[in-house]
Image 1 (tube, one colour):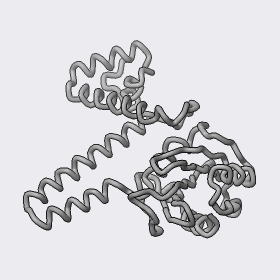
Image 2: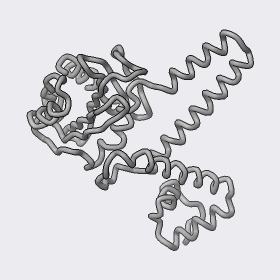
Image 3: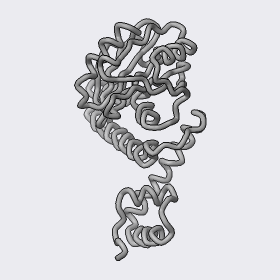
Image 4: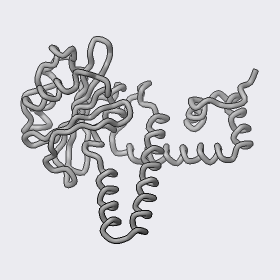
Length: 250
């Protein structure tokens, strides 16, 4: 029997044009009868176009099952909702007027520019894919690659004692210049990433800190010439120990 209401995964497959023709026709009919849902799906299409444009300069990505545009679209929608909520709070505060409005504006600006947000996004985009510039299971090989691109970085510690071995790395870039994402994996397949880049205008030398973003946790710090972030599952109890050993070495 034909399913009347499409699932969330089917809707994402519909937007990505990966739905089989018969089911695609059923989804189109359902959307025609549900204008509110049709508007939501059209917003997804716009998100996908912006995403492809944003990634256009990042090089060709190798296909990977975890590079899920649907998940990235969900995050884009969440960010849009947070911006709208912040704007509403700012408008209300300005209605009250004076110093309170200015303080609300400052808080909104800080909340919209979270420390090492690019590290979390890089983790989501690349850690579960094969789109790495180098596949390296040997720590020395990864250290050599790192040294070629970042000549002021310290010695990468051996994380085997914490259950992690290198997987590889990818060279990225942002407005400050080159950045790198180093990926590690334990025996259960759990992956973490180490992100490093030059200090930026917003966060020059940041104090050590941490924040949770969905199911991920980012622990960040500055050391030497670079800013660093260790991104892992939010419930990984090894994260703080890993941050400490990385913070001392790099």
